[in-house]
Image 1: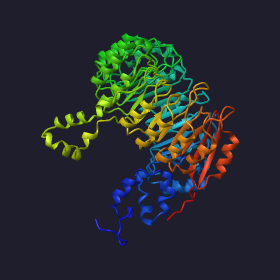
Image 2: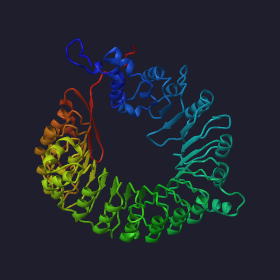
Image 3: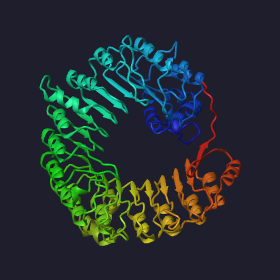
Image 4: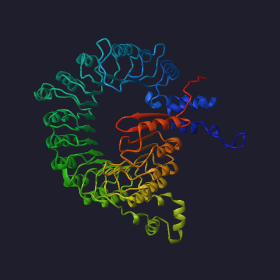
Length: 615
């Protein structure tokens, strides 16, 4: 590749496909307001269709577009956009209807809201207009409104309704007019039984059904299906979410009888479901890959060892299992799963009070592909489990051991010892004693003897200390998120080790836990954040009575990537609302937004020229 005329290569000298690849990692906000204004080449490349398939203002750091600017942008990308997301709190009817603009490749429209609202004429008008303007629309998501009979989308295959006012309008007629739906989602609705019966019996191509938080006369539905008048033709169903509903074991069994293709089922907080329902799912849906049986932390679960045993016996393809706060599953239930479900990638068993270190060791030996583990509240686990998981689970990305108070120091020294590295090299093909050094220099895998975990949650682990933090820093260099709130034995020295060695760290929570167990972190630690935390984006330091505004200010001013700092305010702190307001006025070249709620959140924005320059 030749050098540019200036004698040195710039990004613009790279092949266009390389530049486009780089642009994939740039926010849409920067693509629009910065990249487009750099040069004519970048302006042209930034308009590639693949960057603008979705238009959603959340992708612009919640910048509120004036109607004219939004319509200018939409007109500019109208041939690229496939998904349009309208926020009813920010977009007016003119922006929503976008007269004189037609998105020729539009496939999906979503209406969203950040607050509960009733259906207004504006939304009704928009849906009616879109039914004519976009007859080829495939997915539609609305809030508190179902279109009248004249609003027909002939090719619609996915419909989502969020009934925030818990009301219904003309449901059955809508579904009669849209017989080709393959994905149906209800959220927070009061469903009439005949509507759900119609869906269960009249959609042989249904692939997804989600009725989260929906109230209905489920006993009436069961009686109808049990009568045998019509068998639910759910042979294509792959996704079933009935979480937070009053569905019984018997109805769940009827629904899943014909659903042998089910890949995901979510029965979170279904208070009437017991082992009987779990066993029916396991027996009738052997190819299931994701099973979620979570219970509310303060709720009651009737799922026990026999349910877990049935899952282990029948569901050999299981990849994701969430059994949070089902304590009756017990250590034996987890061991049974570990010895059968070898394809597990995600296992969450928070609140399993009887879980033992030995069972965790078995899990790490049999489930070679584990990527996420949640052991929070498993009170019998010790440091041995944490050390075992970090050393054996080479694919692990997420680990949560919150409130595991017996976790203290880590035993990780032997994994990175010179002796083991040499042994590792000698065991590789064609590597002898004299080639060990050269092997290390040429093969990056030889240096991969550390954990690749990127998220580590250790909140309220009361015995975790600086020594533990030092070993975490050494052994987990890929960390992006670390939460050690209420680990009150950790001081500035422990945090310094993490900041120095975990170069990719983006989110850090070093808050205290209570008045009696406040964080021991002080302003000196915040100076270390400025010095070493170059990639930090979010910092939480609430419940801390040592830091001051003078300690926070350098972070806000000098940390280039920081977008949020959350601190405690009140009588027992050294930080006041007035002090933060004064600080925000002194910060140069940045825009500071303060939000005072239970704590004070400092939102940090780079100053940008908010204007659209069209070439």
